[in-house]
Image (tube, rainbow over all chains, first blue to last red):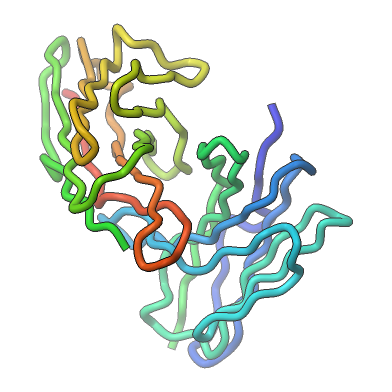
Length: 111
Length: 116
């Protein structure tokens, strides 16, 4: 079936720098995308979402970009902090309420 | 957002036994979902559980192995039956969350299962 995937399994970033996490999706009919953060021992926590009628959405220190032409999604974290260390997942909503998750990227923030 | 209480948070079980995981939500929700997260991997949907109907299972998951109950709009259980070490995973429940004017999906903290 169609799937959502990530380019980088691990991202090491220096504290204070910006982080960019990428995600490719293959279902052109998907109309809703979500980024989740998962810390060790916890469930996924909602970060930000975007609908297919948008190409950019900003939150607090986070921005999601959607490029439907190349089926690409990215999450940008500004001024990365130690508390941002976690695994980040992109997820695709197939409109039936079933999320399809990407492989995940481990973000490691170094001092 | 909705608050989900999932129990137990972790368990170590003997092979051949069964474990029932509970998911309690602080608000009424139509759609509840059960996911599996194998060690170091992403989340995979097991089934969708709507109140008043049988759960709908994804490819590779069957009711005999993962029976689900959904007795009301705030509660669901997932049973992992006749466990083997390959069932060692984190099991998570999720709900469609429309609280606070936002649309999305909220997850419980998960049940970390180890089968020995």
